[in-house]
Length: 235
Image (cartoon, rainbow, N blue to C red; front, side, top):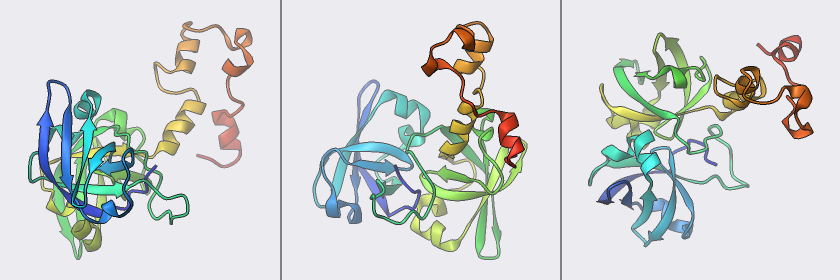
């Protein structure tokens, strides 16, 4: 689990590609202080496992599924990446819950300066936008940010100078692809309320599973319903 507070900007030193996977070698300094083999590191928001390291770099394998779902496939030697170690149990929770499991990618379609801040408007597919809410949290290339506004097919965030300076977001421009991870809480709530088409509850309604009355105790629907949440003020 991560918080979306970037600790360091690393530099890709080398990429070894196979037919369906890759090995990244990333130069870094700060995050090596307590690194161990098997540690989880978020690289542009993607949770990767350390397979080797020394005082100036670390290596991580990138599987086929990860390359397909994220922007890591476009990295090359010299690319800068956001780095964050897994959240320590006794650490401060400065961002929001970030799993490091990318939902997909978005494209920056506009940037504009607003006094000292910079606004980024990001186009994203409906499957991602369904979980994006105004004033809610989203991780962009692993950076915990607040959604400032929504528009058809896109959302916008406002980035303060410190965030732009301490992450690779300050290097991004119109047309660039970014990794997106929506707030995991919304996904769990949707699942408890029945889930999107293709979910267990959806299949149960469509006849794919036995009716709830015939299901085992473990399969029976949760007592949490949309009506119950509305009754207690959740909208």
